[in-house]
Image (cartoon, rainbow, N blue to C red; front, side, top):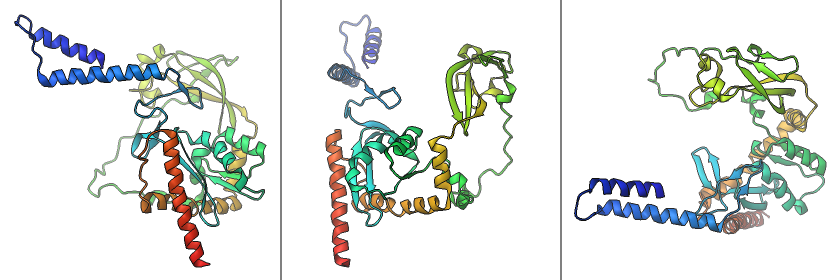
Length: 339
């Protein structure tokens, strides 16, 4: 902002060179004043908040000057700045037993704190169900260690379920007069079998003869242990085989390849997949849709909480709890009428 304001001033001064008096256009002067003021506010905010906010993976979370406790959230309408509202709902009566709002876009880090907050509401026979946003190996390991019975979906659960085999036909169809001409087939990209792995597994050679270095991290892919290799950016920048090696050659900087080595140890994620894919698991998890989704539908549609209207984590959390309280009062009133 300061650089933009300086550039505008220099441009006007160059245009007015030789004049008796430098007179800026009123609109340009107002813009310079606005940019300078915004830059001063940002510098003051950085001085008042010198500490970075670390994320779950060690990366620094980007702050927002309007609300430094909020976070960037990925939604179906793009990335927005806001809070993640979490609710734990009782399956028998759809009563919210725990509600909290958090300034993070990663739901994975919220599972254990939320379950801890409603520990007094759980019994030995309580079954926790949650969607794929809460799935991680660390969370499943913690649940197993604490002895909490849970069914946590993963991103591929529906693809494994034959009941969703024809779900694609229910998606929005393209325009009836759209181009039906046959699309050009995409060329086959180089796979891991096209790379030569060194006997000591210290490096790999790509089809263009460039050397890929081992990144030093082991990983698990499809239940198999694997090692990863990455090419230096200089080797991929002007490579003639770039379009045959990278899925997005316009944006991807370098190629990375993973090579399977051995069958990995049975993980908590593998156990959860087996459990949730069983007939019992599908029946139990299927009840989740009729338990928690109507609650969010009631709060959003009937109570019209489409977005939080306050700033600051404590205020937003209080607003979310008030709406949960109104929902619960309505539930109790309805059950009293039935009784």
